[in-house]
Length: 262
Image (tube, rainbow, N blue to C red; front, side, top):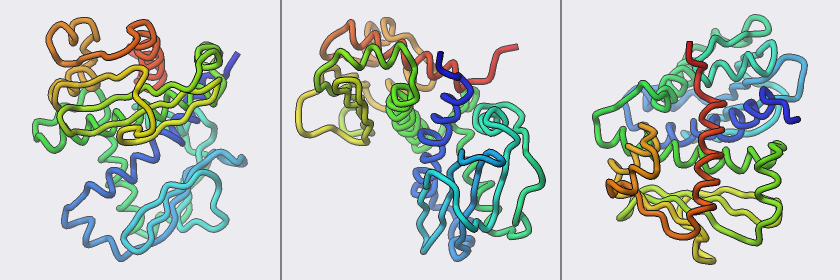
């Protein structure tokens, strides 16, 4: 049976941390401009392991790279994978010692800004600004398509069995008329996610959201697909059975990432 903690950690590292780059590109604020001259590497990792990813700020840009950097400027080490997961899933992170390099305040501030920006994904955060609502939709769409692929690559038995029997198929999400889009490609047990519209073949399943608000109600407010379809928030094109399968796997990922209800 797949280790749920490690599978969640895989999604944290490969599906959530890359959203830092989206936040960095979208941020046009004065504080970002003020700090843009301070480059460096920030490592997040599980102590005494090869589990981690790092942020590399360079020439005004940001890359999120999987693995362990040999000499990061700042290193946040966690006691275990669950302790790292908590930082991104609304829990209490468990560190494995004092952070390294936190005296480099401008670089630390860049991390803090990104972590605060990531809070937009939390279900209790409901921005009113249209640009922020679109950003939340975009980030959820990018995250969920990538997380579906990571669920398969991380060894989830149900997802692996579901993908194994399929030929080359595209599961597309998009916001009409010209909003964000992302897709999952499935082929004989292998999966790959991407942003935008897949251009080489028509989708096997296409979830088309009626504008940002329609997408927001489904992706951010968890409006069920049947009601959303009846209300015109979403139009499903393609196999309803396989669209339902995708919806079930999306709910599984949501349950892994959201804090447990008390």
